[in-house]
Image (cartoon, rainbow, N blue to C red):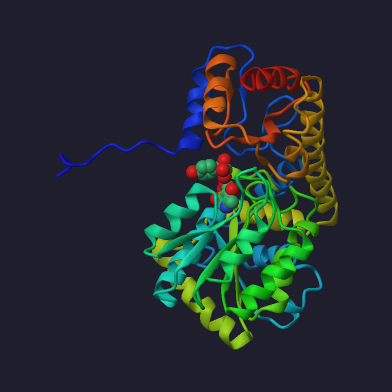
Length: 396
Ligand code: PLP
Ligand code: TYF
């Protein structure tokens, strides 16, 4: 039965982890997979998470199923985190939250919902986008298309993006990154979100906003600007939220699908269909990550501790962005890579070519995705001089 099955290459981003481990260069630098690192290169468990887990272990009384929508306590804290404490969408009771196995699980729920409940609708993703978007939507049977996002000079191509959005067939789905665009780091300004809103509204397009990095760009509320604008101004919005990065609970698989509908009645109809999609995929989501998040966000002391740690992470990344450009000054390359200080989130489209990325890996033990995407959290004040020297060498 299995004779004909071909072996296929693994995920290029995850493959970098293995290649990096095997490299014996003592100065090697990992700028590959999108996981936060502290100044020592570690991805530690956040203090607020440790404390929440201690409390959970002490108080947990059952491990029974939590239901297809997950724990109500989790929805109760995630909805205001994403939509805002005083959101009119919440007051109007037109948002439904379904706990999911990570942001990826939420994307899969969204994909299956679109495929079964909105048959024939195409989906539009930015070019480039997180490669998993392609796989998730096409494997659900949805026709995938791209809109431009970056120009040939490695800048946000907002004009091209908007022109393309204006030509999308009415009723199709448009995937937008809420903040910290993966892989480029180019985010929309508030004025640009407004222009996107106008096109979505005029052309009756359904936004699917992928919100995997809330708090990693400018702040928890600042990063939610676009999400909240669309949810408040449009009748229908799909949001996929992830707690993997902002709570550092990657392996606990903690995310949420938020469906915003025109009114409570329609929201409840949609919600009943999402429950079926969840049930047919994995029945119930894992409970632990959601329990950590609700423990933290329902306790003022833990919330303050978590916010402080998240701020530390964000500030570290944004400082490293500026220091990277500064480190390139002696080589006369600061203007060429100035975009790194302007981009936001974990990633930067540096503008390095695939050939330069190959040389950085082979000659210097510096690992990043061949598109030139670097995980900025992999920079450190120890490795910046080495990185700058290596980048200067591959620019000769
Ligand atoms: N969407 C984007 C753009 C991402 O970069 C990620 C990151 O890994 C995800 C979704 C999914 O995150 P999770 O690990 O929560 O599944
Ligand atoms: O883009 C990244 O690096 C993160 C992590 O199949 C990731 O989003 C990468 C690839 C993948 C799953 C997660």
